[in-house]
Amino acid sequence: MKRISIKKRYHHGDLRHAALAIALDILDAEGPQNLNLRAVAERAGVTPMALYRHFDDKAALMGAIAEHGFGLLRQRLGEATVAGPAEHRLAAWGVAYVLFARDHPHVYRLMYDGPPTWQDAAERAALPERPETVLGMMTAFLRAEFKAEEVDLALLTAWSFVHGLASLVIDRRITPFPPDVEALAAAAGALFAARLLAPAST
Image 1 (cartoon, rainbow, N blue to C red):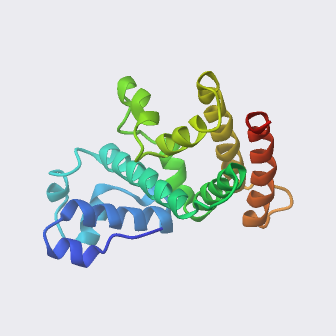
Image 2: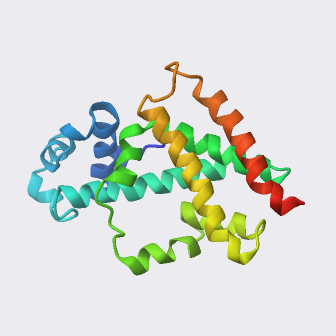
């Protein structure tokens, strides 16, 4: 996962970014049970009260990490974009998605299971229209491949596939374990993408 430079950022007074970087390190290395504002403050060399100026409570910190995680996932998908047929791009995105979950399982779980900061229904409904979001990126791609009335279902189908496979991998539900995650995601993604896009290409 791309890290924020803690020393450089904090030297310039950006405590929020420094705290977020430290929280990500704790989450990746130790899991959510050891993540709290006090632990982050101690590693940042500040008092817990200093962090309360940026995060109201632990839930707010967790929400900020989850939101940042979606940004990192969006970056991964952008880096995985390939030329060629649409199914190749969709399959490559599937691999990137699953590998992100494998590499950062605690962050990934928090992104979907934690208390997000976008609980507002209107904000959630707007996500597919925002190109800088994962849903926005996927929606724009599928709109070029499907009829307008099919896009929502195609999006739900694709998301269910990658989220399901990612969850099976990080929950160690794949037998035998551990699998070659990249090879498995590539093979499953290629099969799924070919089947999903076949009706639109005929």
